[in-house]
Length: 438
Ligand code: GDP
Image (cartoon, helix red, strand yellow):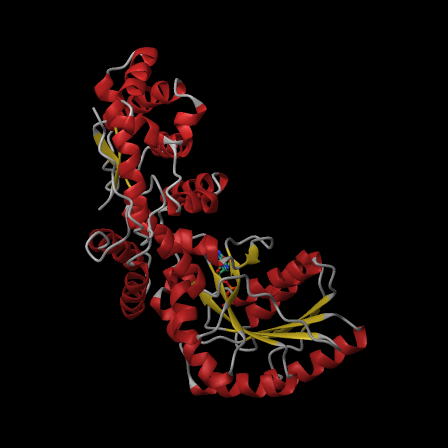
């Protein structure tokens, strides 16, 4: 790889991701995904496609291959989960109808009331329909929760068929002119034909705007399989993942979209009525990877890059105008990243830069700065002047209190950097290193 030399130690690589340097970090990422409960086939496909894409990517200055890879992986995870928040869809005319389905115990009844509160806060009037006729307690539970969030509940007992309850409830909702109707349905311990048939019937009666499958994050792989099955059987518009406040790192969320093609729209993260939020793919990606520190580190590095006007820098490099002013800017940015990585404490198993190395680099930067400081503006802009003139180098050595050898080394470094950066961009236009004349 190509390195920027700061003094004697080469600690901040300027290079690209290669097949070789991603092998080990990819192994860590693979492990992280599996630990987060992403299914093995999804992990395999994912690692393969990210590896293919990552190879050849130029590294952000001051960021190591493993760190940058985490960022690339995160971005890909976000894309896989749909990129943006998948908003709920509302009906253009008449009430918006939301049908909730799911296995028993996943949190369907709780979600019904949570969702009503969530939409109420957005200024929509809501009504709940109690359709879980096989669990009498479920109807009572919904009535109580409805009172708690101050939303009317339509209940017709347990002797009426769910499809009929749906029809009556919908009529009532239209009479009341509510904006959103949410229907809770019966869940079973596992998928069976009777449940699916009943759901199909209810769906036909309601003609819902949204059919959302409620899944429990703690079930891991199971969640993705369920979403797929329900989607094939009854056709759903999305999922709600509950119990994300638990131990699960939520890898199931990734599998859901990958396997079923349906987005997660909302997540439940607690038992309180307020604990329902939109599903943010970026936050979830961070959680799945469990490498938040690395991510914020790389993002900061990108910011430093931006501030520096990377485009301008590139132009200079391509036209071989990269001078001591740029050199200083660049090495400072790199040093800043070094300091930052130390502040962040580096991540166990990921840190190869020791505090001693960083101190050394900082010392070198101070030495370089003192030499650049005493250059004339012309010398800073035309490093060739220094390459050609031993007397200029001697003067700089004297004024900065450094040795002539140190000055020569600095000049050589600048030209090395020019060539290396040109190489990096694939534009070799005769960027040879001028020999220092004696
Ligand atoms: P249903 O059978 O699908 O209707 O499930 P319930 O709504 O009755 O919920 C089952 C249990 O899960 C209840 O004890 C809820 O309080 C709990 N629950 C639901 N959602 C969440 C959540 O997001 N986090 C936690 N910790 N518990 C939840």
